[in-house]
Image (cartoon, rainbow, N blue to C red; front, top):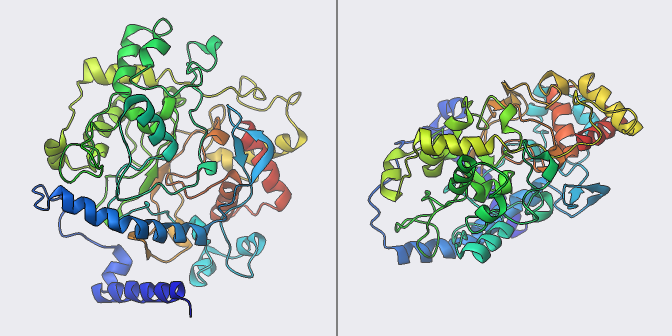
Length: 467
């Protein structure tokens, strides 16, 4: 027996033993932590923390990447002729792996109960753990780290964890940036990453002073749980912090990841990847699962809550930046509400395909989207959202399981994200578990029980790429 297989068997046995020891209440209701609060007084010196966690980093990375390779085909297989705004190829194909001997058609023929009892739910459809779930916190792709370091001399490298999803599955970088009131300008970023170093030069003369100030605050780094001055930071040198646009590059996303701050204990927290800010002016709910009601609420919450894992006590120690609602939050919100969706030349003013511009496959896909596929029940044109929350009840398909430090159960209610420009923001779902649009179609075909055939799935993907 291989060493890897032995470790997996031992890990599975250990997990089963823990659950058994905690009793049936754990299995039915999930774990409960001893406290909701993080320790404030750190007695271990930074040199010791750095040495200990740096030494653990290779094994943490290996374990997590083993999980990803077991779940997905991570190869670089772009779709011919399909690109994002700046010509980065879009990845294609279903990347979630099936159980041996199963097909997507045979799986879709089973009931949720049969899939659950036979343990056939694809592992790539399970909730995805943070690359270091026991720690959480912001983790950035290397291309963002390198550009911020080049422009600002600010290092977002963590010594304890690496970003996990390969670059070819991520949005292009730096992304294009569109303004609702200046559509005549097209991409206003001029191919650059907007930072504190260049924001004024790029935007002076095209937006008003209030929005320039709002943008300045969005690109200004402020202390965060892992990026700060304290001895329990996760950067080698003391850090000025993280900026809103470190995750929302150019008002879009680079899919930086984090753990939602809303639950305890740590293993019950959900991974989240950064959603785009494009088109926030038409949205009425904010946060993947929080249902905050305005972009102002969300902006203030991020700085006061999400930046410090929802612990206002630790925030006071690490450097909470209390934003003033009138002359800071409102200005930040004003700029965010200017961020537009990318052009969609095949859509008419109602958000539907123009038959003279669309392909037959795209038109068939549109019919499936609003018909048999039931996608339009939640994703209504023209922006393809209903501004509501929906619970897919994915717990119907699998039994609760500990996965790399995360207690995997159902997802709960999730915001209906707009699908305009969706090909530009992979991977999908709030935690990034669905690497391609093909994966997304297979996931919803299974979860919604729509029984699409292979041709219908391909046509639906073609339509989604046209949005």
